Image (cartoon, rainbow, N blue to C red; front, side, top):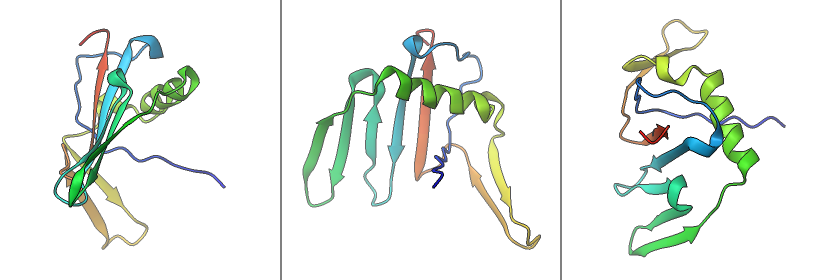
Length: 114
């Protein structure tokens, strides 16, 4: 079974993506008003527990896992995303659009120290 990752992005067009060693990101998903966040530079995942205090977990990505994320960002032409992302289904009456940054799901990418 193939798995796909969909990122809705904050775009920082002045940066370039090269190798995973100088590539970091912050990924957040907000489904309940307070986001769950992964900060790659700190190997830290913060899970919102809603009624209990947030849980902090150390998750260190392997070099090949980070490289896979970087490769996907290159493949989807990350820095050329429009300010509003649109998806059209085969049914022409079905149009979904989402402003970027999205309130539900964001990724901020840092490369070359920027």
